[in-house]
Picture 1 (tube, rainbow, N blue to C red):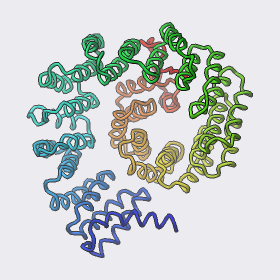
Picture 2: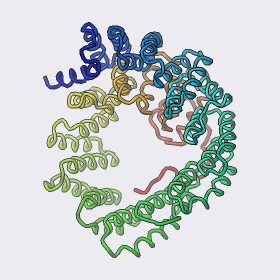
Picture 3: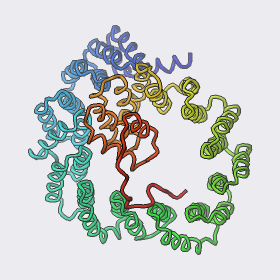
Picture 4: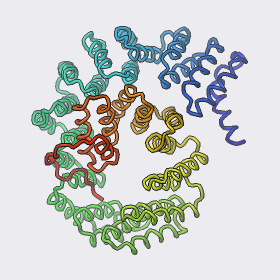
Length: 565
């Protein structure tokens, strides 16, 4: 009953603004639409919401919601009808114009999309360029999106706002259109001469175009401006990091006043660069000033000592952390260090001491079970991992984090039935748990032939977080498994734009290979290998198609993706 009451409250909330003016016959379709939405049946939800919007003749939010649900469902016909209602009721709405542009873009009506966006950007609304960016991000084909964006640049439609130009410049880079990116950057340099943020964006564009040396020269020119500006300093360090010049990023972060946070960033950069000499010097600098028991500083020293392979010193630093929240984290790190030293029994004892410490918060004790389970997984002890999670669930029945972890553990052991059971238990406790919806949907899409069921679960997750890269990847993958290969390609490209993840790259490679675009597929397989050569999706795709990749070139950054432990 409690669940039903919550759902009814959610359903009725959109009606509150309408008061007594909403016709009674709109309530039924609205309820049906919301129930369909909660079930992940987006196409059905879109149709019901359209009917509800038609029944509530003056309801703007309902027309907007009907349009957005139809766009999410990729039902352009229903979206078009809902948009017509929205346009009648709010013809000057920036959000409506953006939705209209998205639909035109998806339908290949590029001139109409451009005209809609020009009108939006000329409206004088300070939010207009953000709506325009949202509209362009909703397109399906990167080439069409790039053509519309190029029109906006050519016709001078983008406002004189550096944030707007930065966003559209980054968009051009994501669209993998070097010519358009160069055109935008030339315009930005002309409009905002001497602006360091422009130089940083220009360097990113050059780096993506393969002109790394020129990019680094531009970054070096910005360094003097970063000395007295913490914001520019952080942005410059990020730009050096993107250029894989981690020592330079660490050098930039060493400018200006230092605190534990900046020391931590420097240590992480040096560790990833494999620069043990500089990291050791930083360690000595911090250790010389560690007489007072600063818990955060001692935690940092312990982490640096771990990377420098000085486990005894790391243990001393962690054990010297005084009470408070940092002490709990230090106890967790002690267990990790002991496990790294192959002192597994002591590591597990430390974790169990945390689990049994009634003085700690329940969340901390629960996390100690997750820590022990992770250590046993790394040790290659799958049965021990499951036993630990079982003990945790005996102490905290139906805890979502423990159930989720055990579900993933079962999946790694190819026990899909048990993985599904645990993930469904998460959804009984927390029906809107986005991570569990996505994990279960992806598992069913990837490891079974229950594709329709998988799609409904993933659609529920998409409804909550439509721009989550992992969820967009799952959506693209289930479309591929359903045989909707071209649609899958669009979504997987979007996922890759949202997050550079080896699994996304492997999925893109597989779809492209299936479509016969093998040179492009190899490029994504190589991207996946560079990020994680042992990725399961990559290994499976290469094995399935009998693909052999050329030996990887020696990386410029020999440390790869290593981080301070």
